[in-house]
Length: 396
Ligand SMILES: *Cc1c(COP(=O)(O)O)cnc(C)c1O
Image (tube, rainbow, N blue to C red; front, side):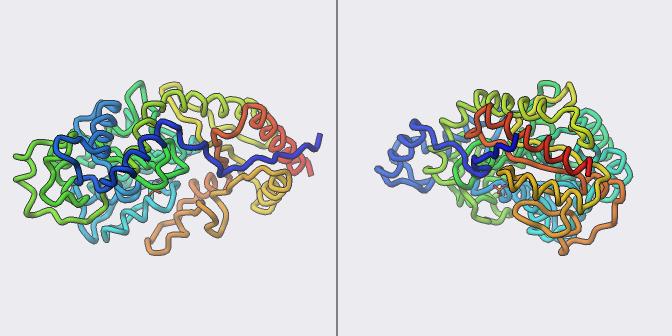
């Protein structure tokens, strides 16, 4: 059984026809800038915000140019200043510490558990060192959000949620991004909706919503927002909030609206694929499955497994063998940042303390995207290949 996989791990589905039609309509009338609307017209960006706020049960929503921009805007809105410490995950992607660095603040990294979530015991120890936590739901794994929010509320720590991998996920039925003061989402091609680049920010706090809107570059046109607080709130902050342009345009918003309407169905399709791969990998000697907690509703747009306590050489051998058979397994623990993977000690603009327990886990994290262009048969084949190659190296 040496069949190889020939699919593409970075190929997403085409943009739906309905979204293409909406995009063409914007191109034909030419009003791409979100504030360029005909008399009485509601622009696509404003409608997107209104619809996403309703979908998430949030009071306010702002559409911006990227997920990373949403994170940085959230930090500015909650008042993070240059030099301020900000708690964040050691296991995440580079745009997260990058957003902290972009406002001149200083990340304090919190460790990772075998569940691939933030280590709440480590957080407890570090909680008094900052007043903001940038919580990354990295690869869609939700920590015990009840305990986390209890700890942060008690300590007066404001939580910003990075939901780049949890759009459509939930903790005990509460949608991801609704527990913290602000939830941030990415609409970049490899996330759950695809506008090339793009971001969304939601909150129930009128002052944070107004500040974020001003920050994104609303000039004094904030009354054209359909999911923003009233003008009286903007009156309070409009002279003291700088314009750091990062608006979303009507073209991207037009592409996103039909995709968001289809999110639940897409989540189901991701999870069917995830379940096939997971069950194909279960009980592979030497390989640890990351079991999902009962309280978590997740989106299986990527899958992780652990090769715990394997030597780096043997892990590299597994990756090499899988690649030979067409299966791209990514390694977050690799010594050098590569593609989208990096480690907390790769971000050398930020100091970090060594975290031996986390290092053990990070070294063993294997990661794979699950694009919807894969069929369920593709997923079976991928699992068989990984199982065979892990087995071959494990027994050698
Ligand atoms: C993609 C991503 C972001 C930022 O998204 P961009 O839209 O690419 O700026 C933030 N956090 C995580 C974990 C991501 O994967």
